[in-house]
Image (cartoon, rainbow, N blue to C red; front, side, top):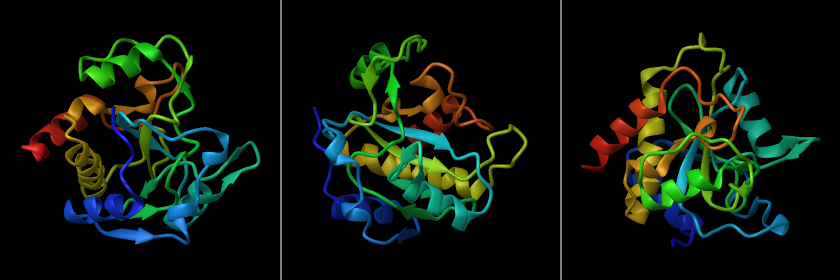
Length: 196
């Protein structure tokens, strides 16, 4: 059982992994904690944004929209590999997902197929939104994929987790397809190598 790291430790961990990090507004206190607890944390969830343009993407992820208030993640990874911190605490990114998947993440075992949505993921996962249209055609620059790898590894390194604590939204919630354009199997392999 892991308590979330402090906001300062999160920032420090990302920078120690070699990432370029931009702090957006009062990100340390921008959260949805009034809607429920954040923690214990068990993993890192990767998403794509279905947006184009870094500034617009960061704004949407910070502020959200009428049906889904922000923050929509903790960090936004833009195409240039920069991590923009937009919130810290509970964020509207994971939604309801499969309790069997959560148990597998906690045990760091192979993930079962997600076939139900009965567990609050916003409570248990760090979330990174990645700037991409998610259409399978919008490219993922190498520098962006490297930043996804580093961000996930930074969180895992702090908590003593393996790459099996890194999942995609599509592995958590039935019907989700993100991230689309690379596989989570390949990303976990990259995280595993980095954690060595």
